Length: 156
Image 1 (cartoon, rainbow, N blue to C red):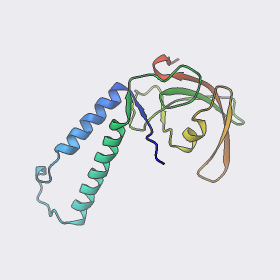
Image 2: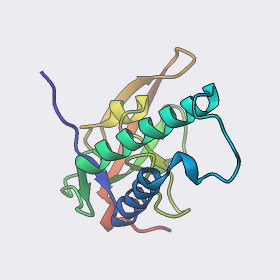
Image 3: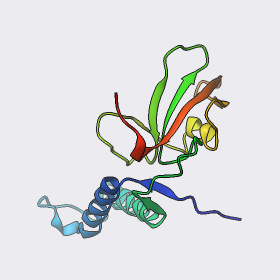
Image 4: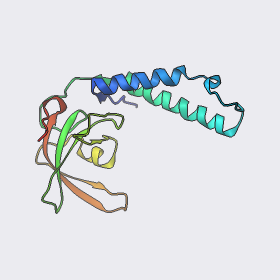
C-alpha cells in the first residue's frame, strides 16, 4: 500500500521550484559554449543528476499544498512553526517544518518532516515529549512547546 505525502510549500517556494524546473527542462546539451563529449562519464553523470532533480521537483510540485496554512490545532505537521525544548536544555528552538527547498527568509530555519526529528515530532501535540535517534546512535528527547501555522507565526 502506498500513500502520497502532501508537501506544504509557501507560494514563493512553489514559484522558485517552478522556475528551477523550467530552467532544467530548458537545458540543452548543446547550450554550453565549451566543446564536450556527450558520451563522457562527466556528461552522463551531469544528465543523470539533472534528470533526478527534475523528477524530485516534479514530485514536490505534484503533491504540493501551496500557501494554505494547516489547522491551528497545536499539532506538529508540515507548514507549522514548531518551538521545541531538547531534554536537559533551558533554551527553546523554533523552526518551520517543511521541505528543505523551502526558503522563508533568514528569520527561521526549515527542518524536513522526513528528518529523524521531523518524523518524531509529526503528530505531536503541544506539551508532548517524543524521542528520536541522533546520527551517533544516541537517543534525544524533545518536547513540543508550541505549534502554530506558518501564516500565524511572528518573529521576535
